[in-house]
Length: 249
Ligand code: NDP
Ligand code: 8X3
Image (cartoon, rainbow, N blue to C red; front, side):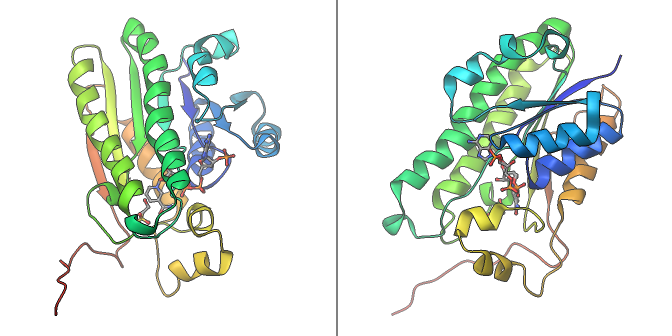
């Protein structure tokens, strides 16, 4: 039977590349996001293999209603790709905008956890499922200005690890994918609210691209059901973790 995958944040970047790849690989894809015109464009491109489904990850009521607002033929979601998310700002914590913090927490943590919660009972009942989440190297390695964004991704990491425990014995797989520097998406444009500054983030680098993320997701999903990839940390070859800071004087 054709598997149904819900991809959150499919209107740009990783989510769009993942949705395209999964349709190509023969999945039926529920593509979500807030920008209706982009969802419509995806629907026009992919036809009946893709369901455009507007969903704001900051809307708890809409998330709670997902099991009943999805068209009946699309309710048995086999795969949830928790991709929708964002960073806002690079200010140090002591200067950061609290509204930005609230939005990151609401989208990356609360909405992600709630959507997972509402889709899990169906997966458990059917004894099949897979949750794949977009964590980040920012959830592992600290950096200046990463404060709440990195903390939301650390939440993703531990939530996915804990889900593995709760779902043990139910044949539901859980994977946390943690990419580093990745270009070709709107991530830095959204974060910095300045296209020139966003472009400068990738200047002189060869970053990961959304297609690399989609390839990795497709591989994780394609493995035999007895194989669970818990976590993947991936970076472009031009990036490495390193360096502890010291204040002198
Ligand atoms: P983009 O900004 O290109 O895409 C983000 C997607 O999330 C969009 O489709 C957007 O859709 C959706 N989204 C944001 N807020 C909401 C919301 N409130 N409700 C519904 N959808 C929302 O970013 P990327 O593709 O780069 O990032 C995807 C994920 O990967 C994020 O979770 C990000 O944190 C993570 N990540 C990114 C890295 C990078 O360097 N790019 C590296 C590591 C992880 P819309 O605006 O239409 O709602
Ligand atoms: C995105 C990677 O390093 O910009 O999650 O935070 S980073």
